[in-house]
Length: 91
Image (cartoon, rainbow, N blue to C red):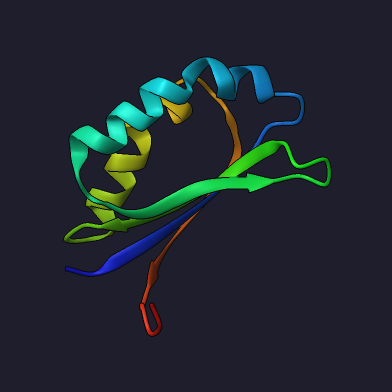
């Protein structure tokens, strides 16, 4: 299956939203089983300010649907989301 990278930028001042929904987000990742790697993007102060997620799914529609069901997205955390097919070369 192809890989898709999702780069999400949090809304300004939304750290509390992220923290309140973090466990649900992590549970969703565990339940769906399609995340190859993921982690928060950090701001200059070292605080979580976004997400980088690599998904192993059959097509862009499935990746888009996965993103829409993420508890972070449902909570309105993100200012922007970039979803693009990605080719793993190293690692």
